[in-house]
Length: 158
Image (cartoon, rainbow, N blue to C red):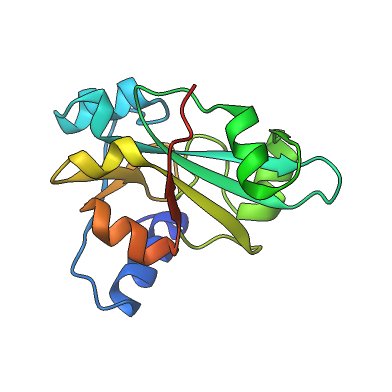
C-alpha cells in the first residue's frame, strides 16, 4: 500500500540519504508520545518528539527533538540559540516545517531550522520519530538522527 504524500516525502528523503529506514503508518494515532509508544510497542522515552519553537525577535524556526518523557526547557533552548524562544503556533509550524503539529518529522522542513537533540535519546539503541503525519513513524538509531539533522546534542530538558 502506498504511503500518503507527507509520509512518502520522508521516506524519499531517507532513501536519498542512503538509509534503509522504513516509514510505517498505523491505523491509530501516533500524535502524542504515549500514543506512538503504545502503537509501536516501545517505551515512551524512546519516542523522539519534535517540538517546534520560534525565536521571538527574528521569528526563526527551532526544532527540539526530545525524549517522549521529557519537557523542553525554554530557558535552556533560548540560551543555546542566543535568543528568547517561544512555543510556535500551528500556523507557524505548518508554514515553516510543511507539516502539522503531531506529525512534524526531524527532517524535511520547508524552512531551515536550528536543530537541538535531547541528550537523553542517546542512551537508546533505537528511537522512533514522526514521519510527516500523526500516524506515521520511522525507527532509527540516535547516531543516525544526529547525522540526518546535523543537530546539536544537548541537555534541553526541564
